[in-house]
Image (cartoon, rainbow, N blue to C red; front, side, top):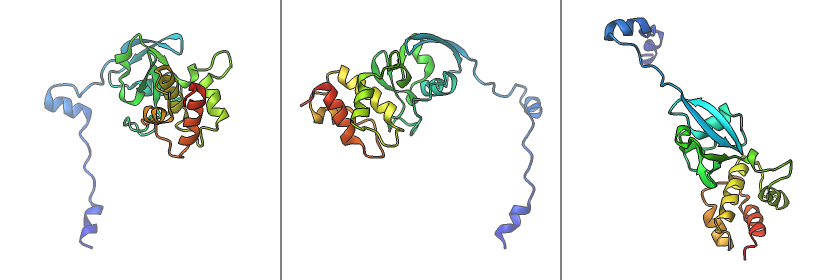
Length: 186
């Protein structure tokens, strides 16, 4: 019973903002100001006002409404948040949005054209290269870049180049088959 006696104690109230100002003579920390930012997002100009700490992933999902880019580990380890920045793969959870002013950002929503799937999307469907689908958008965008980079000549190259994208369902064999078929790999 000794340890329980502390539970009945009232929790002291936190100091009010006014008392902090009186005691320190300055205002409490203010959130950073928003910075104007223009991107070329899926082929269109898009303007935002973002705080300096906002990641590209959060900008895409929460402000642009492009939820196809997934927030997986939020630590740059799983690849679910992969987007193309100026045609190169990037983990959007590790990128600050303000660092990409004027850049061309392509998300999974920007791959299809006029209602037709991108060739990589079609290959993933044809080869059943997804299960739960959570990692699929990142896998597809990585595959687009890997093929464009010419790093899909062999199965081993594909596996190595796609190793930053984690599939917890284990659809790797089908993902490799989709990339391999599209790239004409050996």
